[in-house]
Every structure is written in structure tokens, then in C-alpha cells.
Amino acid sequence: MGELTERTPEPMLLVSGKTLIEHKLELLPDSVDEIIFVVGYRGDVIRKHFGDSYNGKKVFYIEQENPAGGTAQAVWFCKDLLHDKFLVMNGDNIYAADDIAACSHAADWAVVVMEGQAVRTGRVLIDDKNCVVGISENSDHAGEVGNSNTGLYLLDTRLFHYEAIPKAVGSSELGLPQTMLQAVKDIPIHAIPATRWIEIKCTEDIQKAEEILKKQA
Image (spheres, rainbow, N blue to C red):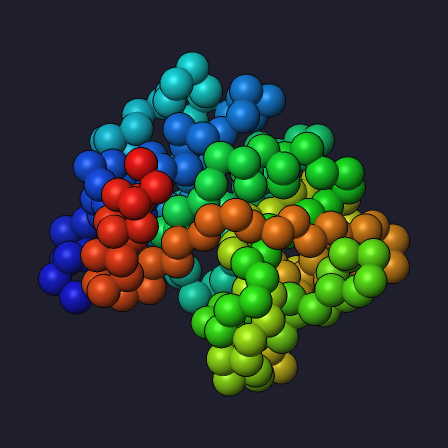
């Protein structure tokens, strides 16, 4: 993101007058009563902006000093604050309200996927029952057309019965998708088709997001 993130963490960048974080938080269902931010670079900006509550939901902060520790490490840092079912979202993506709701109401576990496009993230493999059976990282599938992992999950505390494992062999980054997959024989992981997912990875994506949101307003 270059100069855009010199003083601002990426999830606080503005798209259509709102931060990327606010685009998600304003869509949370009423069943979500607490929010946990896992913060790292310029986490003070997020703390100052949101404080200790948002729309009546209590807000907590967890520090992940080394984001290269991975998405599973981020969730494990929240372990003592999590109970029952919980949603996990990437801080820099924009989701649709219907998709968040569908994910939050799924039975057991779920992951929201964007179907039928070139995959820039993990490619989610799904069986004929619409359950997840595998995820190949972007370093393994070279942009094939398939089901993209949008980084929006429904999980519960059974996740912590499994060991957080690396994203890839020899990597120090602990991957949440790879960790989840250990449970497929015990817990169904439902694939929820996304109706809208805007992935923010570079400055050009912000302009594209502005255009998409303007058309859908």
C-alpha cells in the first residue's frame, strides 16, 4: 500500500467514506455482542478510533507483535476471550451483510467462498455436500479458477482442541485454514457462497472497491 499505510494501518484506510473495518462492523448481526481486534502495526490508530465499544458491542484488543506469526496465531491469542461460536474476519476485506448473516447462522463451522473466479488467495476444495475437504494456498495453485477463500469464518471453541499448524511445510506462519482442516473428519465445515467480496491487496483495489460500492448503492 506504500505511502497510504505510512501512518495508518491498512484496515483503517477509507473506502467510500468509511474505514475498511467499519464496512464490516456495521453489518454484524445482533447475535454478535463482543468484538476483538487483533492489532499490530499502528494498532494505536484503531484503539483511538473505536475505543472500548462500537454500536453497543464491547470491544477488546489483542496485540500480535509479529503478524508473520499467521492467522492461526492471531486467533489463539484471543483464546481466553472467546466462547461458544465466533466469527473471524480479515481486517482489510469488504463483505456483504447477507454473507455475514449466512455464515453466522450456519450449522457447525463455515467458510465463505467466492465461486468461479481466478483465485488470488487460498483455493477452497468442496465436496458434493458443499463441505470443505481441502484448501490449497496461492503459492500452490497459480491463480486457477475456483473457490476463493474470503477470510470470513464461523468457528467455535472446539478449534482449540487441535494444534495450530504452519501454513506450509517449513513455514513459521501458523495458518488458520490449515489448522481448521484437521477437524474435517469430526466437524463439517460448510462452504457458504459469497454474493459480494471485495479483496483489498493493493492501491488499485481501493479504487475498484469505490466503483463497486457506488454501483451497488
